Image (cartoon, rainbow over all chains, first blue to last red; front, side, top):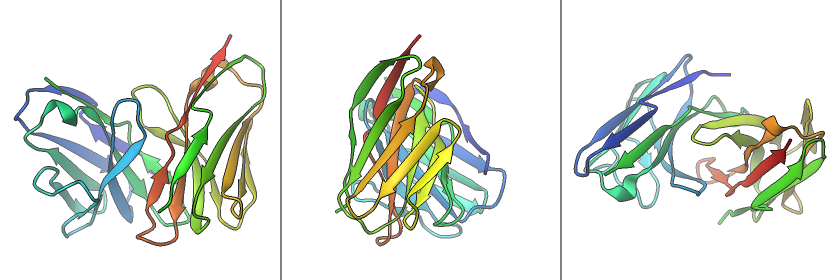
Length: 114
Length: 113
């Protein structure tokens, strides 16, 4: 299975600032996703990162707040912009090689906003 | 709209006990179902993937079953150990709408030594 490296693993940020999270995969993957997991809750899909084009965002998430890049088939970034305490969550990168394959996750980025 | 429910929300058992975690989903038009484990503050680790045409999958002490027509899956853990303590999440991949994965809220398991 793909090995997914996510950085940083955690950060504490001031409100109003932005943070970029990186996701590196050790092999080319078809699909990459970004999820948010708020404290005590399950996973919510933010967007599907599309290689070479704009990400596909889920309802309630917008590009201005969560810009995503995917320059190639092994790397993606998620930026959390103009952060507020409500953005305190674990952000998870996930990959899928094909629809009949298991979905795999990075270790996540635990983000706290003061 | 696909909804995934996991029961119980939390479970505490003594070491060595066999246990069953339940997952139900409302729309049977699924591509597959996957069980994950999540340790505190960590990402998700894939445990088992069951395709829609399959009835069960086994890996070591874990056995997952799927009854697509009734919208149910179970994860059976044999001879539980303290190291099994974690949150277990069930997720279904829809056949339509971009093959999105819908997650349950998870079952938090604590195995007492």
